[in-house]
Amino acid sequence: MAKLRISEVEFNQAANIIGCEVEVIKAVAEIESRGYGFSSNGLPKILFEGHWFHRLTNGRYSNDSRYETISYAKWTRKWYGNQDNENDRLALAVSLDRIAALQSASWGAFQIMGFNYKKCGFIKLQEFINAMYKSEGEHLMAFIGYVMNRHLDDELRDKDWARFAYYYNGPGYQVNKYDVKMQAAYLKYKNMK
Image (cartoon, rainbow, N blue to C red; front, side, top):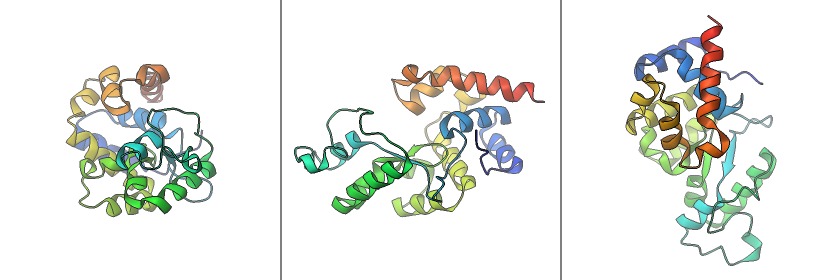
């Protein structure tokens, strides 16, 4: 696994703000990021979610076969690909509706959906996007804002992995075993002490 470029100081600051163990923050970072917040091409890691683009554009592109990879009514992983593919999908969506497209991708090391920019503490979507391009430390700050705004800090303090995963990753979190993976990562970090 690649190493996130988030310093120990930044991890400790995040833990202090949330009021949890630093190993908790590291566990979430590891599982959400899979080790990186940027692609090898220097762009922020993204995952484009066509069902959100469909929703945010009222489905106006969903019946056009030219856009079948970026606009569809129900979630599917059928169109997921490597980061180059994801960037191409985002670029196509941006060419149709920039705001809806940027809000329809999950961004950075913590894979926060663009439509959550205000919950991360940003006033404008573009400020959030700029932060995602800046550094993994900025990804961490957005994550802190999101956690505090959504009142998920208790779940992290209590290490209630299932409840945190439910609200952070959605009701399908069990399919990907986010809660189990976060708990295992937490225990790994605790054992490193």
